Length: 510
Image 1 (cartoon, rainbow, N blue to C red):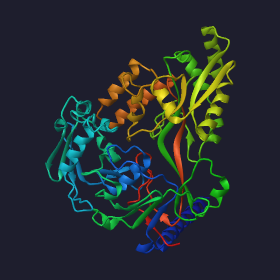
Image 2: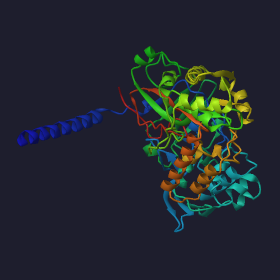
Image 3: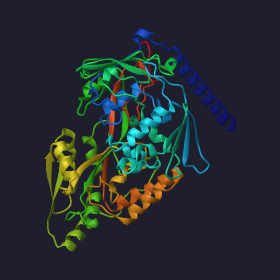
């Protein structure tokens, strides 16, 4: 028996080695397409709208800008944050001062990117006159919040150019992991703003042409790592061609016929994104001011019934912190019908009627209807759906003029905190009326914690507190599916930030 076991183990090892070698040879056998064929074509994308990195909020602009410029950090081919222009990063003994040694970098037109370039950019980002929606990124930097509020001059911001290649950033308190937010598009060095075709970037590509139908990028030979960039040209087209083109890269629209996907000759890539959709009750409105009533709704939501209504890459979730890779107990205790009956008895109500605010969109309509069916399983609960155009819905929600909303949140930076600040008592984004000393204390303690691991654990506790009180009822995580030509390799798909990165991509022969 022992010999049999050893023989089987040896055979398994040989087979494993064979498959490793075989796969290696298969990869090695792939031949790169010649330079003139190193072209990535992307169909069905919207064109960028805002060429100013400090103001660009639409995904298309952030994605294109991330290819025209390179900042201190960037998103790598596996979607994680990695050094861009940073050669070396060190922290002071007390952890509050970050020092960045920079690589040599020039723009397309030969302008050198220096530490002073970043100092000026950080100051402009924080300045209240800029009115950037991303100025809050710098609130952990010395005087960052005061500058953004207009109570301190931009020159007082805690950023200093020690010399041309050394940038120093001083934080209000020690904070491990601060550098991760520096990969976001708002931190891309942009010495001058102009029309799209006139932008003078230091990134791997520059814009060759742009019209109402497409934007064309070509390789920037002045990029500091140009020798590592294989792609010569990127063509982004507004034309949707999933059903007619068997090459290129295509975002798959919601509701795409499965037959179209089955006939696709390339590969389908499902990309989770940082966005989260949920039910958000207005806790100042009756009966949502009753925590047990909110819990009965949270317990009644059947995510399995909602799942078929979602797009291919979207996933139901019980988490608010959907980018958190650490498992957390987020289950709300109790039984829906029993909890709801006790609420009706206490409130002396035989029937409870509520209004669910949603928006005009095919997917949202199906999900709202599914949620209505879930919730109306509770005896004598009536759910009326009010569907409004997105802009009007958002205005009502921001004004607190709603009862419960099918809402969503797309965090602006890679931190668990980004999901939670909207529920802090004094936060300008807090439209749900929630005010809770325990939650605020957890958020304050987390922000004052240097260790990223300990800080994230405090944020998980804050998440748990929100879920226990049913202040937010998570439904699903956003995602996007791409049909990708099998000639294309090493396309990066970050969870947050730009939709894709092509710095490392390659086109192989068929």
